[in-house]
Length: 428
Image 1 (tube, rainbow, N blue to C red):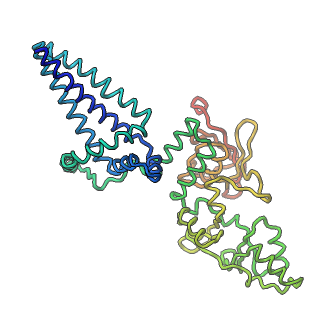
Image 2 (image 1 turned 180 degrees about the vertical axis):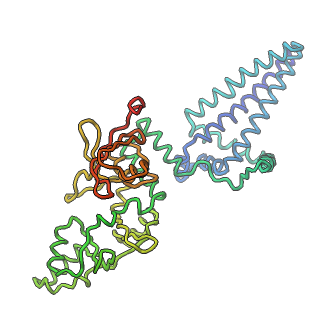
Image 3 (image 1 turned 90 degrees about the vertical axis):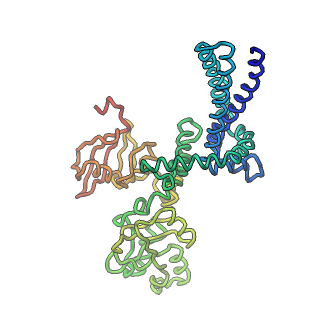
């Protein structure tokens, strides 16, 4: 009887070894870097190609792992109990078998292979991709039957898996990885902002970054040509909207280079220049245009400048290619720009902020996390939270920051003082 028990030991250990392979494969395949696997596949790595095939149908792969893992563990435990109870009959034999198998499964089937798979996820995934691909093929019909039963059962409770969207969208997965590596010190703050800016382009519209109409610098096309030239030369911008009658009536866009060419061609006869002839036609876009779409439109049209209108066709502002790029790389300053626009750091750690500074710009400048879901500008954020237009001197505590109104012109908040993030005891 003891000899028979020893004869079964290698079989039990072999079953546990195969179960350990399934355990390691599950952890490695779910933790493997998809980016690296796709890169290796492009370089011709067959193991990476197998990993990507498995990950393309992750539900089936995990189903195969769970079936193989559980069948092997249950079978090995049953064999061990049968053998040990023949040597030590009764409850003591069952207790001994349970204790021995628990130690073997936890240490050698769970902890050891999973730890190795966590440390060397990509290498283990590539090494075990072949056996796992065969397991998926062999267990395919069983997995399909189980999935059918699961879907029908969940449907009884109102859960339709066929209509479920991905739990974690690709953009959020990338954003989470960037934030995690930033917290670990592997990604610099500037790089995190740039990567986040690229992802945000598909979630923001032009109304969130446009220059508001009250801040647009434009020229009356009916002015004498010499005055038009003077105003164009005094401006810091190379593209200026032209209007007739009223600022809402935009009739063209004057480019400084076109004006310079016309002046050179006039050979001193400045008054002969026809400003309407050298103006470019205005490009109007709705204020709901997504930044990613507008960036592609700028690149396709080889243009840099568009005027934003609302659903009634009323002018709301303007947006440029530079504005969109600044959402990715941060503020782009040239020799005519101010180094810091609207954000002035104070000795006590607070900042004086112009009301029209955007929340995103303030967050980037100070590495803060003020929300920008309901308001574009800092003034808009305070008005949204206060549910009123505050008076100068009023103070508010929102989102772990203290806001103080410094100046107000009519119904517009023009200057604020914002404290750095406060500790909980300071908020009390």
